[in-house]
Structure formats: structure tokens, C-alpha cells
Amino acid sequence: MPPLPVEDARDTRLVVDRTRCQGHGLCAHLVPELVKLDRHGFPVFMDTGVPSWLLGEAQKAVEKCPALALRIGGA
Image (cartoon, rainbow, N blue to C red; front, side):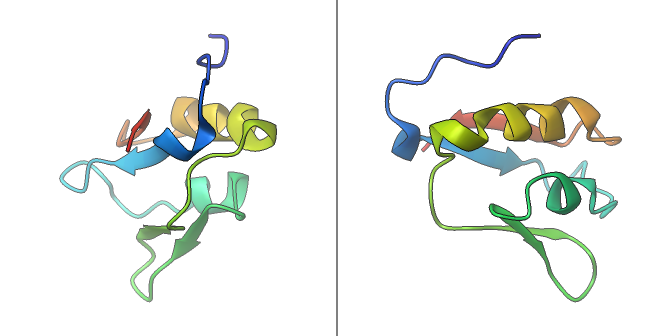
């Protein structure tokens, strides 16, 4: 799946469905610039949009999320 077209990276964010997330931590491993893990191993996202140079890695994190809890969405 090709990366999503981005007009303004500030409006493009990684979003997690907390009801699906199981705290695997793969997203933090794939895009540590955007995701950190809390003390329980669940993702905490940086308060910034996804810059264009990280969009491919962010899309990879979405595709590899074992719980299908991660997506790229608008602000």
C-alpha cells in the first residue's frame, strides 16, 4: 500500500484505537521519533504531526500493528 498523500504534515498524525491496542510496542520500535511507551508498554504519541520524511515509517508501523489498532489520521 503506498503512503498517503500529505498536503500539510502538521495535520497528519498517528492515532491509536486504545480499545484494540495490546501494548506490543512495535510502533515505538518502528518510529521512535513519534512514539514512546508508557510504564505499562502502551504507546504515547508525540504532540506533533508526522513529518513527510517519516511518513513511510509511520505507514509501515500502521501496516505492522499486530492488533490493527494504529492508523494515520487528521488532527
